[in-house]
Length: 108
Length: 115
Image (cartoon, rainbow over all chains, first blue to last red; front, side, top):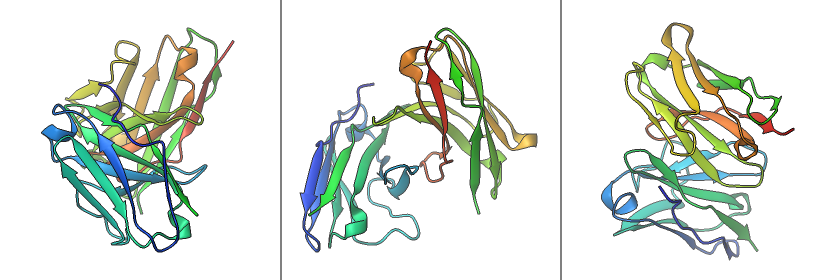
């Protein structure tokens, strides 16, 4: 399984929206409804933000939303806040699991 | 609350072996699939293996198949990863994680493979 493709970095000003893409194939992202997203701050363990493409775990702000079209999944952060600055990883079930390459979100 | 505590990370020479443990508490461990996920310093996440709640179903990433063995002891609420034939590229933080969604993570344990 090859890693899913994410942009290396995205940035936005406070209050703006940013979208992170996660591109795979029909064997992973396109073939299953099991895409999840993780936020990781430096020195910390990852935190689940979105699962099953669009679902938010309890406690995750509704500023975070997920979607999928074909072989590409997306995470959108609306109303960007300083604490959203972190690395973000997508993950897809594919019989086993495959992670994305990771995206650094910078709040300008 | 859910707590996962990994242990066993250490400095080991190439070709050596190491056994990682993960102590689970705060949830019914025997109900959950569990995974090991690693992250090399400054790099991305890599899923390694998962084991079903009963231990009957196991999957491995190609990168560790034949070298690593996942196991669990539901009576002890513990997850294990036996790592053999270690290579420099196995150097990473190793996380114990609840599965199918990776909703709970331990703090990680560092494995360093170096001569």
